[in-house]
Image (cartoon, rainbow, N blue to C red; front, side, top):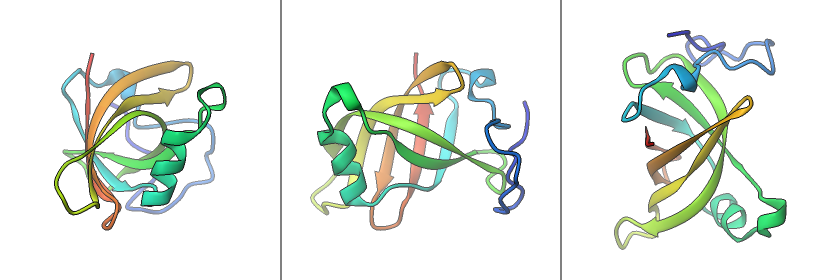
Length: 121
């Protein structure tokens, strides 16, 4: 498995190439969400006109190596409240990795901008 172009949270100038290659991970693999959209950004992506789908960006790390992370675009298809806090969400959608898409489910907290994501088939 390849490592991220981000090393310890440091941004690299190697743009356009994902080094955490999601396509090499197996279904059921867990990713840590290091940062993501605000509650308003998440809502805006959900209510965007589907013809002009608006992805949100998540910084993801492999669970076994959380200091190496990569940014990915996610198209959110469904959001559900996880509890009554209005900050904790269950998401379904897909990630874009080059010319491939990967269905994912995620738990995400908009007050902490963190959570976890699971690849599903």
